[in-house]
Length: 284
Image (cartoon, rainbow, N blue to C red; front, side, top):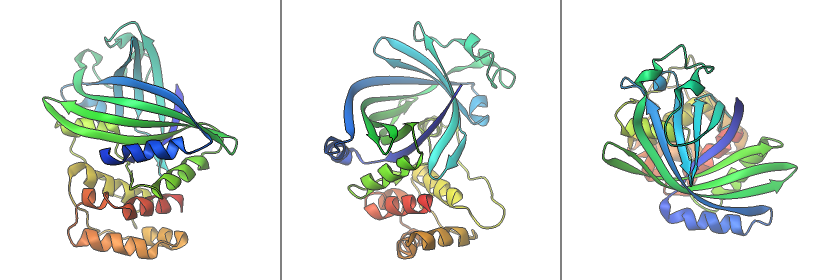
């Protein structure tokens, strides 16, 4: 078992070339290469694995196959931190025996597992080495597919390989100064489950004022559903405090006013203000 820490940003398909240019112009970034990834996600017909907040997939990269189990984990300053198990496979078939020593073994009926959706994309990879840290940057372009339906998938992932985790936020904010980004707290797996009709997203209630992470996650769920978001009865005092600490009170007010007037989150993603605000709040 390993622990993964990454920041994931959604970008538009049209801006992917700008991401490439930003990385190509960075003297600390080394281009590693490109690969095609086919990812089949498994669950039971009742989505028992998703209810455990875990994701199970078999990934094909060329002639290599890897079985991976991930927990949803937690969000730390805008980054995902979660447990991860990986096993090489001889072929595309799921190996149930490898799951015997994981938390899933006693919680679901492994014999009911079946493919519920796929995420298929081209991945370009760079390694950034600076400030005694090493970060893998993956630029993904493809689709999420389930039951004849597809949705576009365009993301940039910054994954910490070694060093100070603060480098992740620093790099994300550098990119956000160049192109519009969206700090997406919804995983590829959640996108697939939603498309498959096996996941009805809802934010877990928080006692007292809404946390910054809670706010960011609720906005991410609104992005997933293609809807707007309104504060409603939420107490945003903690979010406002974080905005004040980051010097982003005006930006927060502007975004909240646009959302209150009925703007969909996906509309706001097209301009840089929302993504920059998200990263300011997470960094604060």
